Length: 228
Image (cartoon, rainbow, N blue to C red; front, top):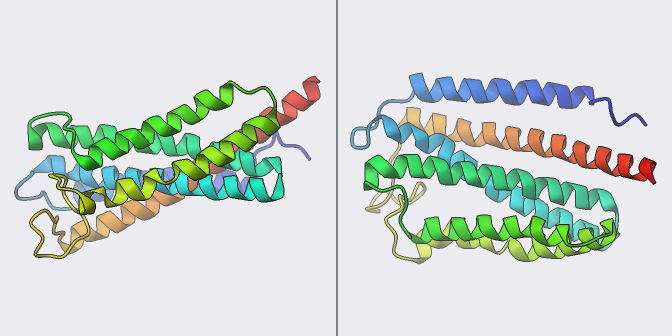
């Protein structure tokens, strides 16, 4: 099987993901209204939440793939888990940076040690440590075992981060909440359309990036095997 040739379906997904991201950007810039209180900076919200969603989904996928590896001992599950962690780190970093862009004009600071921001930062650091620990091992099997266990344990940070604004006192806006909540962000129909679209677009982008990274992991393993 020629792994160096990119599958046609993956090429289609690359084009689809790029097209959807551009379309979502146009939708956000020109279709959604300017929020009355926050102004134009509120538009960062759509990609911010979608990035956070994609990052958390990636880490859940990594844990599921890690569990599949421990059950089957098939190395391709480790490739998938590794790919999902790497992509999840990128999405989570985008969420953190875009949140800082929003926070500066709204909170008059780039960062506060709010429960949501703190748990997100901890989650990011925990998954960064995943790569440091893997790099200290020599064999693919040892890397895969450690990676699988770590991904399963590390996924605890995902629900902790998601529910932090509901478990602790926070100034972070609650996107999905009862309308009588003082911290809830009420969306107009156009805002809601852009919000849901962004979630779908970033989910497709997540699948595309993970597939590309998985394919790279397979190529790296093949090259390593051929070099022996």
